Image (cartoon, rainbow, N blue to C red; front, top):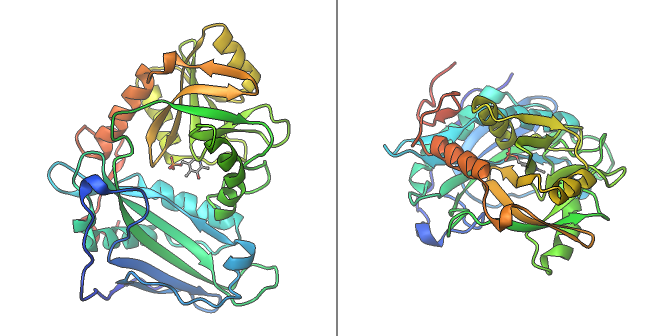
Length: 363
Ligand SMILES: *Cc1c(COP(=O)(O)O)cnc(C)c1O
C-alpha cells in the first residue's frame, strides 16, 4: 500500500538566505528536503520532509556503479500578489515516470509526487527569491540504493526533492549565444536513453561541451548519432529555427528529450497562428537556408533559460550568423509570454499555472 501522508520534521535553526542579486544557479539549497523510500516488499513508503542533510548510502549502492537514476527540473515562481506557483508540474511528473520506465525504476504516484513538491515548496516559501527573473529551482530525483554490484535493476530506491534559489538567467537582457555544431561526439541515439532525463546522458555530454567552451562557445549543437547529419538539441535544450516565416523544430525521434518548454512554445506558436512544424532537419539544410538568406531565427528552449537565442553557429569551417547576432522577434515574444505566465503577470489561457497553496486539494 502506498502511504499517503507526509511527515514533517522542521529544522530548529534556519540558514541565512543569499541576497537576490547574488544568486547563482544550483549552489545554495534550502533548509528542508522531501524524501521517500522504496523497497520491493512495501513499495514507496515513509514520505517525509526533513532538514536538508547528507545521505548515508552504502558504497556498493547501485547508483554509484551503473547510473540507474533519473531526475527532473522545474521552478516555483512568486506572483505579484505573493503567491507561489508552478508551471505545468504534472508534465514533469509524467516525464519522470517515463524516465523511470526506461531505467527500470518503479513508478511513483504522480498526484502524490506533485503533492510532495507543493508541500515542500509551501514549507520553504520564504526561500522563493523576489527579485525580477529569480525563482526557486526544484530538483526531484530518484537513485537506486540496493547494496549490490551485480548488474540488475535495484530493489530499493530513494525519491528526493531538493530546492535551490536561483538568480535571473539574463541579468543584462537576453543575449544571443555562440554555438558549435558537434561532429564527433553524440549525446544519445535512438533506442538509447536520450528521451529519458537520466544522469548518464549528462555525463556523456561533458566532453564535447568542455572542448568547445575554451573557444568561446556557450554550448554544442548535437547531431543525430547515426549519420551526424540531423539536428537534435542544443546543449541541454530543445532547439527551434525560423526559416522563411515557418518555425521548425526537430521531431521527437527517441533520442531527443521532450521539453516542457518545447511543448509550451509549440502551443503558443499555434495559438498565434505562426506556422510551426516538427520534422527532421539536417545541418546541411540549415546552412543552405542561411546562404539563401532564409534563416531568420534560431533559439534553444528549456526551463532554466526559457528561450536562449542563438546568434552564431559554427559548423566545421562555416559560420552561420543568425539575425545579425540579435534576438529575433519570435524568440522575444515567446520569452516575454512564457515568463509573463510563469510569474503571474500575464493571463494564463492554457491553464498552465498551479498554485502551491492548494496543497490539500484532493483532485
Ligand atoms: C531537461 C532537458 C531539456 C528541456 O526540458 P524542459 O522541460 O523544457 O526544461 C531539453 N533537453 C535535455 C537534454 C534536457 O535534459
